[in-house]
Image 1 (cartoon, helix red, strand yellow):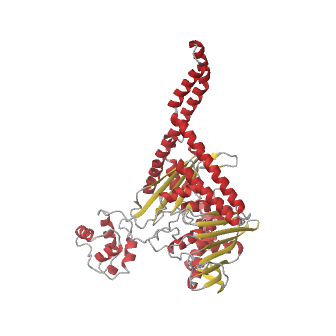
Image 2 (spheres, rainbow, N blue to C red; image 1 turned 60 degrees about the vertical axis):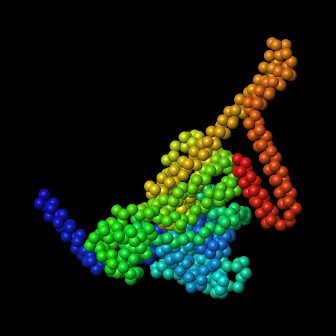
Image 3 (cartoon, rainbow, N blue to C red; image 1 turned 180 degrees about the vertical axis):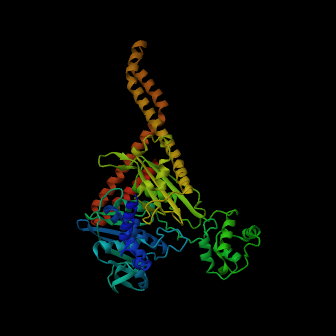
Length: 589
């Protein structure tokens, strides 16, 4: 044993001799990395985690920015998207909007600098939040093709064409080329973004680009979206709402949703008393609440000293006191919902269900102090649900956050969990996964608690979960009544058919037994049957009339389309007539 210990000691000495590093030598490898360098190595966190998903993520980021830009300008969005296949897993993309353009001095930072933008520092409801999206597109194109992204943007002052890359190590834009552009590409103002990417594939499925734009059109009925796929097929999602959404309003932080560090950071900007700072900078803080705060804190915190002199201990005591004070819920005036009528029109035009119900829940609060609201819709029958390649009908779940479709990470999302927490059998939907059902859920908030930087699923928040679930249960009760009524009508129709089938032999038998007139007995049988089932007969006649009217309308529209020599007008006329007929059908239902 002694020899063995001596041998181990010799081995240790041999192992350490000449190989031991000093602290200085170890820290020679220490260096700072930029945010863009981090995401270059961790691009999956931005949503670039699969060939089909990569292309959808690019279009998602570009369209999201375009919609936000148009709504900031308070104009109807007109967005054009094109995808061309260059080679295997190699695509060219194009996105054009009609917003007010980007000033020359900001073009580089918008497309070539991460965590730079107009949204992150504002407590305002917008689709983007972090300032990562469009610069992430630039980086992905750069690391897969080595090429810059192309931008043409026109403001009221000038039109600029630029090619931009990212200096990954410094998180700074590289302006490869920049010049004035005289091309007449815009009616007034706007921005065009085009580039190339590899490691991508276009697939027309429920997580592809087409489906993303289809759902975007449903949740943004005020927008017109034109899409050209790699095969050259052109699809126009016409706007179904003539109402411009109100401009998003910035709201102050709520005392229940702010932490110590936030309070310290805000206070450093102010040269007024702490009490005035709290009233001025936070929502729902009044003089009465300040008086209540004074009585709770006593001499522990001097609320009359300058806000920029507030210490960490002062802020901690104020935040803890806030927890014991009853404040009004955050104002919902900063929330911008789609609206029940707009959702109905959009779903009728694009999904075309047999029946649909839309529910808007009252505004509530999540994470202590962030206002939010949930909009739900439940579509049943008709073209609701999704069709598989085998022709089977499956249920369809449409998830949205601030009107942006969430196509990926379905199982991790709070919305999906809320849907599957409902016992659909109670609402006459016996097999939810295999029913002609489309569910629409939109969570609206100034702060969406995304599960990752890829922004494709919402992390669990109990308040949001409950509102989404209760909203769908409300819609489910309406659907249940409709399905029950429909089943009862079908049962009555079956009985009516059976009675009519037996009317003739019964009349014949009664005629033989009573020696009465067969015709008179048969007429009496029919009169009794028709009197009892009068409502069903009238309903069938109304449906036949509606079908005949729709057929005539379609024939008229087709003849008009044939006589029109302009191909673009043909497609527009057909889409308009179809959407009108769909709306009529929904009203009749």
